[in-house]
Image (tube, rainbow, N blue to C red; front, side, top):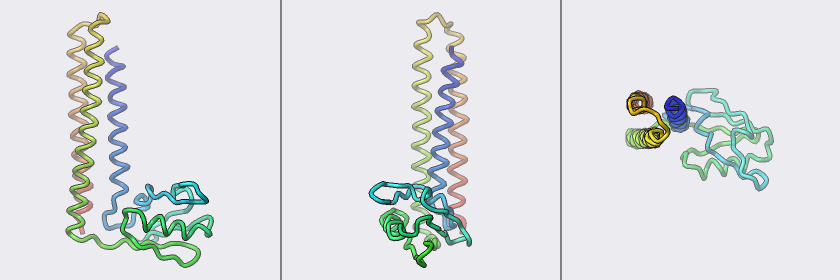
Length: 184
């Protein structure tokens, strides 16, 4: 029984880390990364549609993203969606495709991004600790179901070790992203 509680908590924790990795990949770090457009939603015939499901997004050069739409009549809607997003990039179009030129990051903007990375890392750690707390509460409830205290104590220790390992993992992921952002 304790193993099921620990396994379920570990799965939830790993999902939290995957969410962090996905969110960090959407941050622009001075290089063209198609994933920065993952959050862009376009008003396509009255329906909010993810940009990535409307176009092929590629990076032909290190600082340029090329958006090749399957339906070129949506170019204006895509441009509007990019302009209203928090990317801060002006799109240019040639009638068939949209180009986004990723500007070099200023030192000030890099520092803002590092703060954002730290905040995201901290939020993930809070989520991990919350999952651990819920798992520990479930383990304590197992005392009523004739599970020995030694077994519960062992399970609590194991849960703490898993949490510590994953918190270190979050720190490493955030440190790598900070290095990427601060490198020129």
